[in-house]
Amino acid sequence: MNQIALPLTPEGHGADTQLIVTRCNQVLVTQFENAAKWPFHTGILIGPDASGKSSMGTIFAQQHDGVFIDDADSCSDEELFHAWNHAQQHSQSLLLASRCAPAEWGIKLPDLLSRLGASQMLWVGPPDDEMRAALLQKLLAKRGLAIGDKLVQFALLRLERSYAAIHALAAELDRLTLERKTAIGQRLVAEAAEAVSAQMDLTT
Image (cartoon, rainbow, N blue to C red; front, side, top):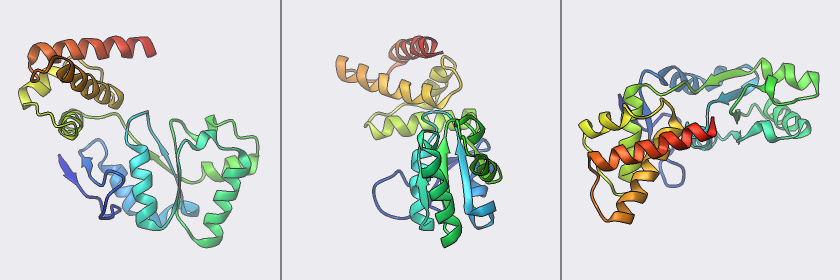
């Protein structure tokens, strides 16, 4: 596992310029590096909530002087057709992000649907154990919190395997430590993980 600045990552502030790279997303990283070979200069980034699509897309657009459209499934057919045509006319990279593939966007124009369907599909897969552990530590560090490796594993055993659960756990641990003015220990982690699991159950 590595936390690296991707070749597509510019220096500076704004979007998170560090991407955790493990076996679960190594193929995706390679696909970004080969963006010049994407069909029609267009990529479709598909992944669940909290999986980093917005940050990856923003960084990619900056590095490639391209266009990034988040939540592309909420755009009209006309907006998407304009963006696609603009990318072809200017040989410019276009990255569209969504939780699902274009076939599920409700597109009514057959030509647009076929063109997007022929673009490069970029899938954000589920996090592996290395990704989950590194992401939790990173999110906690951003909040000024630290957690040991054994406690990380204790937490992950109690969570579903998703990016959203990791983000929710970091937020819950931050809330509890502030509320109780205490350091993170096993009992607090167990309580936070139980609360997050209950939240996940309510949303499924």
